[in-house]
Image (cartoon, rainbow, N blue to C red; front, side, top):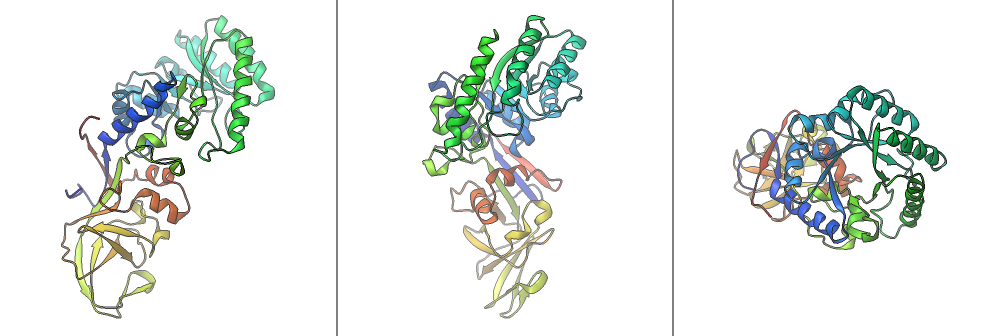
Length: 381
């Protein structure tokens, strides 16, 4: 990590890490006889959806998952033909393009099922669907009291040739808290929902496990698993030990200016930090418009010149200031704001802890107009 970023701020994506992680995760799935669906929603959690998708499909994944229809169609437009599930759209949205493009659609209600059946008729294609049961997350998914009717209607639509009910699925609320009693409650509700689908004459696959459940609950891997955050090397259950994942994202900038200030001089808006001794400052042209939260002011460091150095003063819209004491830093030197941590640099997990959030929020927020993305192919796993 010693090359200079391509512009004022840059996200470096290590494809070798992505491939490694998918190999690890799909290997675990295969131990249980399960397929792997890699989730690439939100532009691949900020890493680049199509880039991640192609790497994942070469490393053991068979399926891809996205939230929205536009995300699905963009992958198709980029030439990705692998099985692809889309799960978040509204009644009345035009699903015709998705059906025509061979995108699998999640169905959680009678109205969604009707929309898909209409789209199948318009395209002359059988639409492949995954029926979603709400087992306790209480977001998307059919409520238990409406499930039997939805299953019956789906079975009729399948008999009519309009749809193929490929899978029954759900999503866990607390899988990242191993031992949480809700996981077993949801698993039992899922089992009952699947039995109802079988009783209606359907023969769907089952998928329930997200990254955390894949890593901690082999019994819930069923026929397919849906790793998301773990694909990008960020562990959802670090309390369970090292799972061998490698973070793929490094956030970088470079020194724009250096200067000496005397003891007693203060830095940045509000003068919230005053130099206790003469020191060298390094100006770095990245701020809260580029993904550095203002609430980190005075609470984080960067990697510069082979050491962690504190950011002093307030984080501004476009820039931060780093205290370097007497270190020989120069304009153009690389600055790592977070990375894998292999060399001692700050990590995205540290940012999340200080901010009281999760690492998901930080990496998915790194796709910004002034932040370039550099993809490094690396070596195959």
